[in-house]
Image 1 (tube, rainbow, N blue to C red):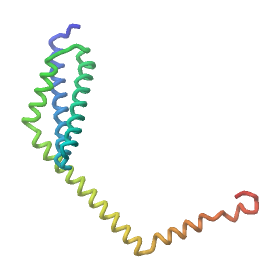
Image 2 (cartoon, rainbow, N blue to C red; image 1 turned 30 degrees about the vertical axis):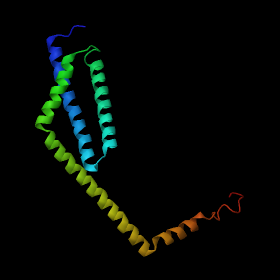
Image 3 (cartoon, rainbow, N blue to C red; image 1 turned 120 degrees about the vertical axis):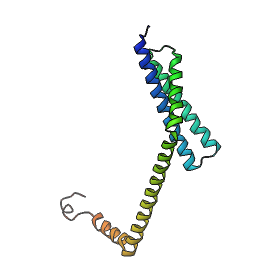
Image 4 (cartoon, one colour; image 1 turned 60 degrees about the vertical axis):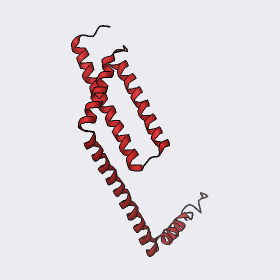
Length: 151
């Protein structure tokens, strides 16, 4: 199948964006590895996930946009997009992801502290025993249905 020059240029630009997206996905995995301090095994799993996603994305891109024809400029465009991303914005994105992970960890720690405080306050007020008695009271069969043969 013949692609006109405009279609090939569009294909190169789309593959450039594909490379940027894959590089962003790599940075997300890299930030997770940095934040959680993965060892060798978990790093290998993350790298395997990245390569599976990369291969699936390139395959799907080739099928959907390049009409299932091998176009080497697609690989060059994706590599160029990733190179430009890593050269220009990777550091900023990693810093933002680290801040985001720190914020999420702070929110989780704050929520855990709030739940712990509420649990201690409920025990001091005797709420678990009151709830148990309340549930026991409503757990009995209703007197409305006893005389009518319903249980």
